[in-house]
Length: 374
Image (cartoon, rainbow, N blue to C red; front, side, top):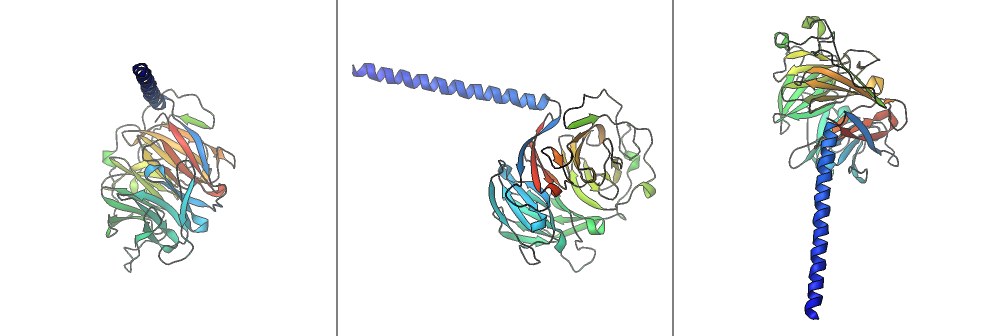
């Protein structure tokens, strides 16, 4: 009798173990199928989260993804940083208005970087970059200098590449480069940027100076988004006439190129890694896929995401070879609804490339989208 009971218990254990194994295998199979679907699906964005209600955000100008998909919101109007998880659950906040360490005057941007992770906050009103630990403890600052050629003046963005820190120094129309420790390295301004037009790819060039490929059949427009192929005829204009930084505000990188959004020119300027000017993506305007006062930009997996601030939409360019525009999309429309924007300032991509966060500044909120098909 005892042996029979033990045998029955053993059979039940094997049965439960079999069920668990089947469930795990089914989950992995479905996960793989969904992963393939996300990659093969037409390029689109789906709103999954809205952060802002209940936290009295006031003109949030920046947003940054950190490790574990934590989200740091630059609440510019309240001079503070708020931290949330990907589900929108509040974790902590720090900062008040002021000029001393840990205080902010018109903070505009933040970026999470490094191991251990540090949060770099663009304290624009104080013309400096402040660095914090993820718990909000102050770590360091840089950018203030008695040397006029080395000081930050109303910076708007900070980014990282090749072991260096790049700060868009909007108030001086240049890019300041620092070592990973925050020591000044060099300044890149109009007088130092050279033309590399002789090395522009051989595809046709549109009137804005951006290289493009031949037309292909476009996909049908989708709800709250549209796309089109880009074409053009004219060559890159003489750079002494066509190019000059007017108000750079954001910077992002691909393997071969550097992209800078210029608010005054309403274009995305393209440079090689030596900071030679290559050309520009986008044409100034308020229709189609034209840009009007672009602000935040992000490059990932062949797509350039642009917060088209002046039009209150998100414009995305699909690029070939990191430079040639082959298709463009618009997402959202101006307004205060679920899928509307009201002068969105900055954007951030999660480390796994699955989510994009948008600081919807004048709607006092942050929108989180799931990316499909990229």
